[in-house]
Image 1 (cartoon, rainbow, N blue to C red):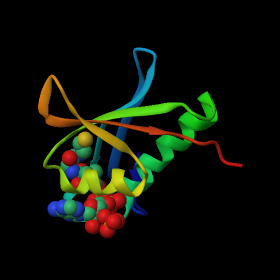
Image 2: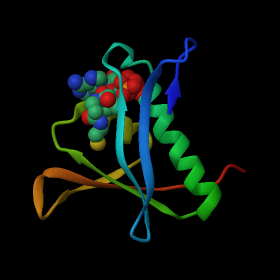
Image 3: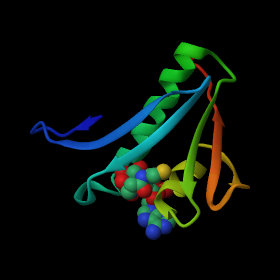
Length: 102
Ligand SMILES: CC(C)(COP(=O)(O)OP(=O)(O)OC[C@H]1O[C@@H](n2cnc3c(N)ncnc32)[C@H](O)[C@@H]1OP(=O)(O)O)[C@@H](O)C(=O)NCCC(=O)NCCS
């Protein structure tokens, strides 16, 4: 969760084990605080947490609508790989290998 200095929640990320796989189910930032890096930092935080808990090479999965430019921009920046979901070609299946902090 991201909270501003007044205590207002400005971003949330829902993540956990989806089956046996680490995954992000949802990520959102309030409209008036978008494009400030909050979404990127929330995703980086989840990746760091899974890396610490599961070790190098753990893959974090997510699914993104193919027209979701902001989320795809975040994923590209963080080295997330993607392929179209064969069962729903409107969405990308996304995965990134995490590395623990040295
Ligand atoms: C996706 C979302 C979480 C991003 O949050 P955010 O705090 O704005 O993200 P950031 O500021 O870290 O990064 C956004 C990036 O998208 C880019 N961007 C913004 N609008 C864009 C567009 N229309 N097309 C492509 N890229 C775009 C920004 O330039 C930025 O990239 P940069 O850091 O390289 O400049 C937010 O847009 C959101 O809540 N969307 C609705 C919910 C949603 O779609 N969640 C994801 C579901 S999988």
